[in-house]
Length: 205
Image 1 (tube, one colour):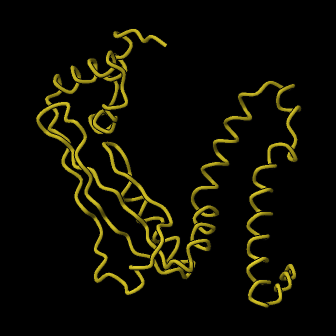
Image 2: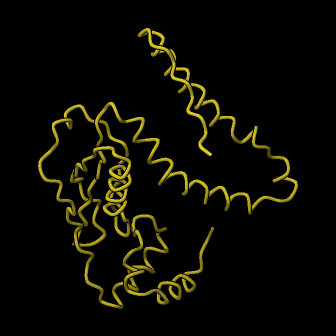
Image 3: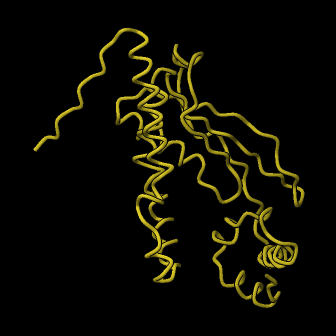
C-alpha cells in the first residue's frame, strides 16, 4: 500500500514528542522513515537514551545452571521489554515459581544517525523441573489474554457466513491435540516409572 507523504507528515506532526519517539524507525518504509526523520529534526528532539539494565536480581540462584527459559523479551525503541519481563517475573513468583531475569546486551542495530540504541534481551529463567508449569502459568495469565483479544478482533472482521462456517471443533483442533499429546507423554512417563496416574481433582462447589 502506498501512503501519501503529506498524510504521513500530518500524522507525525499530530503526535506528541513521546509518541513520536516511541515509533520503531527500523519498521517504517523508506517514505515513512524520511517523513519521520523530518519531523524529528523539525522538533530538534534529543536522541533516545540507551536502555539501561533495570533489574536488581542480587546473587544468581544455585539452580540457574540447570534452568530453563520460560519466556524472553528483546528491547527496541518504543518497546516495553523490561517491564514485560518484570511482569512475567511477578506472575511466576505469585504462583510460587522461583525465577531470575538474565539480561544480555545485544549488538546495537545499524544506527540511523550518530546515536545507536543499545538493545537487551531479558530471559525469564526458572528451575528446569518447573519449566512446563511456568509456561502454563504464563500462558494463562499473560499470553492467552492477548490471544483472546486477537481472536475477538479477527472474528469481528468475518462476514456472517464466514463466522457461522467456523465451529469450536475445527478451530480448537490443534489446541486439543496438543493437550492430548502432553497428557499422553506425562502418563507414559508415570507408567515407565511404575507409578499410578493420579485421580483427577474433583471440581469444588
